[in-house]
Image 1 (cartoon, rainbow, N blue to C red):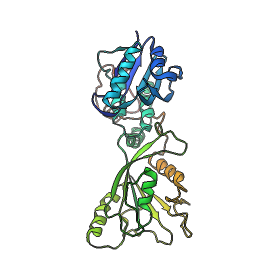
Image 2 (spheres, rainbow, N blue to C red):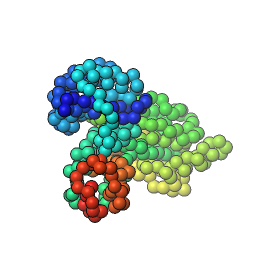
Image 3 (cartoon, one colour):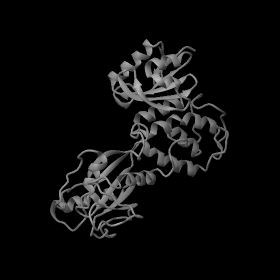
Image 4 (cartoon, one colour):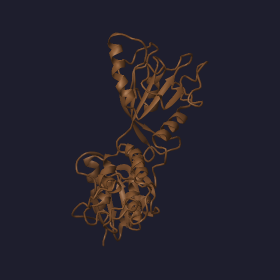
Length: 351
């Protein structure tokens, strides 16, 4: 089969597009379009320039198979497609059906760059699992619930007393002003929602970033008027948090259970650049003003949200996979995954 390519993601604007490139001569095509990605080992993920029009990811999935992932703007997608054709690839007539297409659709929706690598490995992981004993359905589904956070971001809520440094911390991690900052308590009178990419120290923002919906709540204290109503509204956000962080300023007491609707998952001492800054949460301290302790804080948050590294883990990322693991008699389309079909034994994946 000569080299062919197809766009696996839906047409129209999107965050990311995925091209599938495979067949005889694919390496020569990739060399012209994605340079050094042509010589990458199978399973390698490279950040590279694509067709001279965009920086994106290139993944080698087989001896003659690649996935190219530029940004999803229509002009960029057209330019990369044209470059593939100019390099000698032929546009395939239709999108593939099956788990590869499901991966492409999930990757296009995923908020976190870290999802791309984990999703790209799923077809091989699931095909290898056919006919073999699985972990208990509960363990696999529980892990999948966690990994689903790479597609639909978890909610991170930061709570604390007025002027604990919550807004300054959000602005530091987000890299820009996302919340009002003032030495006057009560400046944030409503919760501020912001989608923030958390990159572990030494990580690649295009491959390792984990995205969260960060909620900066108003300072919790006795208050009246509009500020009091904002605090009451924030209580519902606090209760629904996937991860609740309490920020404790120097010389301030921690929030009581009457003030905070649940026990926080992480407690952090703020303003470590000032004398009297408390050590909390097993010694976690930071200064949003100077950046001290920010890397440790980000690492702690990522580890709490994703206790296991997402790579190389079986993930029921698609409703069809989840239904099979749960033991429902769902019949996938022929060729969706491959392997044997038939039994519904939940301890063995039989397709």
